Length: 257
Image (cartoon, rainbow, N blue to C red; front, side, top):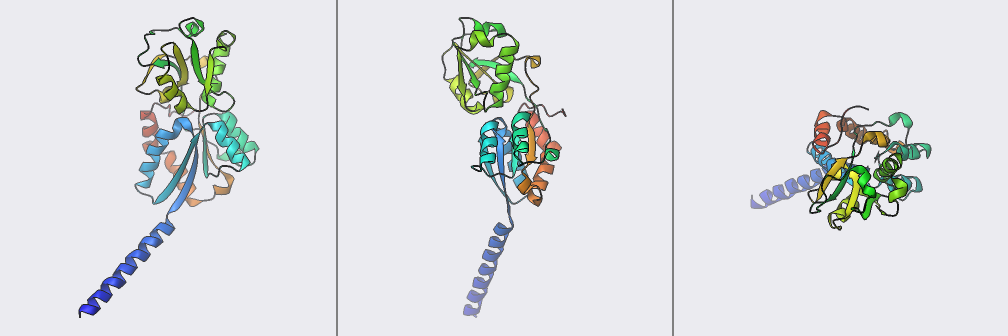
């Protein structure tokens, strides 16, 4: 009787192991190539999705340009691409990696000028970025980071670019800029997305939207993954009210363009 019971336990344990392995095998996997400024909000969305879906996620967070170039060159593999502007999404469409009719724009953002939290500078006007009060201006790399390109557009449109370009220092992604700005001298300012302000930074003012192209994000599945049921399910989830609430709470504009 004792041996029979032990045999029963071993068989039951074996079934449990097999069931677990089958469950793991059945779980899908999604690889997301994400514009750096969306990463915190996307992590929250992914956690919410995984609460009811046994999916493994891999998140690659970089500037939109680096992601797009990596996808085209084959250095990066992804199922879904999120770009912080239309330009880099168009780049992957033109490269034959994404179908134009699958692209949609779920969120917007805005630019702000900010200084380190403990900076004594108060109420600095946009035009005063050219004054002696500011010795360094941090922006994203306009060649790969959309938030840097928007900043350059705003400086050019307001006639400041030529006056301040000697002060400009670039950072390859927005999180690096926020970290750099937080530990910079009191005479350093930065231009970044509103959603990436941290507790170590203080906003001076919002950048007028009329000075730069509309800030919209674009999402699409890669052609190689577009027919994947997991991809379809996740993209549908990303357009849900629950996800809109997450992005709204993070400071994104969730209205339709």
